[in-house]
Image 1 (cartoon, rainbow, N blue to C red):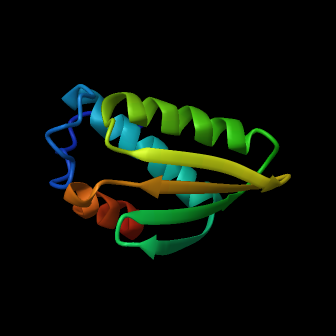
Image 2 (cartoon, rainbow, N blue to C red):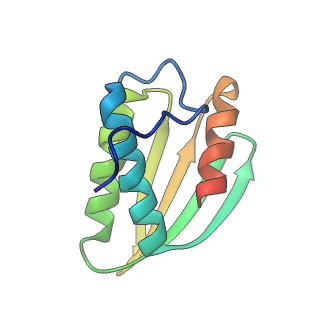
Amino acid sequence: MADQNLPQPAWVPDACTLPTAERPLRLAEFDELFTRAVRGGERLGARHLRVTLAGGPDLAESVRDLAARETECCSFFDFTVTAPEPGLVRLDIEVPAARIDVLDAWAARV
């Protein structure tokens, strides 16, 4: 389990409504997902990142759930989750121009 006393990353925007104490836990969820399942990342534009993930049959639902929870606290994200074939998931992440720095940080984590 992630340390709840970790400092908030500098790139987390003020617009994020997730309680500060929960932010390291959410970040740990994404880090665990990316470590376990990412097979590639592609920047399709300054405001658009596509992440390709591979895993078991429950991967798409897990990614959808995590993306939905992230959208609840950071509504500027536009996540699209597709499963073009069993075990393969594409996570498209788009942000407005004012949040490109946040997408840059996500791309670095991928």
